[in-house]
Amino acid sequence: MVPQPNQDAADSFDPLRPKLTRIAYRMLGSMAEAEDVVQDAFLRWLDADRSAVRQPEAFLRRIVTRLCLDVLKSARRQRETYIGPWLPEPVVETEPDELDDVTLPLMMALERLSPLERAAFLLHDVFGLGFDEVAETIERDAATCRQLASRARTHVRAGRPRFPVSKERGFEIAKAFFAASRGGDTEALRSLLAADVTIYSDGGGKRPAARAPIVGIEEAVQVHASLARMFARSMSQLVSFETINGLPGFVTIEGDGLPQTTALEIVDGKIIAIYIMRNPDKLRHLAEGSVH
Image (cartoon, rainbow, N blue to C red; front, side):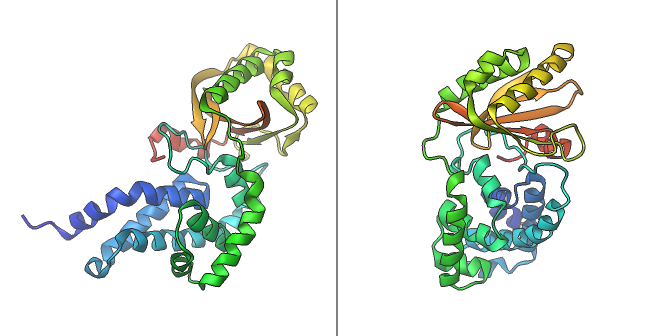
């Protein structure tokens, strides 16, 4: 039987879909938007003269990157009116990711870049493309792409862990943090936190969350002491300890019946940042089994 054109397109596209989704997610910080972009790329693949495409992966990577650049331009305007801290959608990593150094802090650092800087940095430094291919993808010359990536590298350097915590130690600290924060053990909590720890909580205006980052160990302990009194009335239900965007953390069901993710950035055995996702729009994909 001769393959139908649509089936032929799907057969050549589907093996590349997970990689294209990873590219789009790291460009956009939104799994829902990433999946929309990849589906749009598939529709363009259907309409393309596929017999003339020598390297389907490179061709589709260019399409996905250019679609992401379009999305980023409008997303920057939307983020200006976002309520409270903006965090990327959490991705729970059930298996080791070939790009697991693209952690949540790095993705937040990428938010400070222009769309072209972000694309040049990710394509070259993370995905390993040569600058000639980066130039073709983002439609700039190679020299410009080198400058874009260099500027980006300077901005994001602090977001890349120099001495990442081991998975075992990370989960050990995550379990201790969960017990101390939910149980109201302020001394145990204090022993886990760095002096300049920062709490980022993203509710998106749809669930209660701090409107600005909470900085400092005393402030963090005070916040968790208040939360512990709430937990005493309506305890968090632990779903699982997980690797979330490259960081140790856990997934819970909170008193309002909705999920929450907590990811911990750990340096020298101390928690230096706590990333709490409460925005229900950004947690929906966890229940839908999205591609990691």
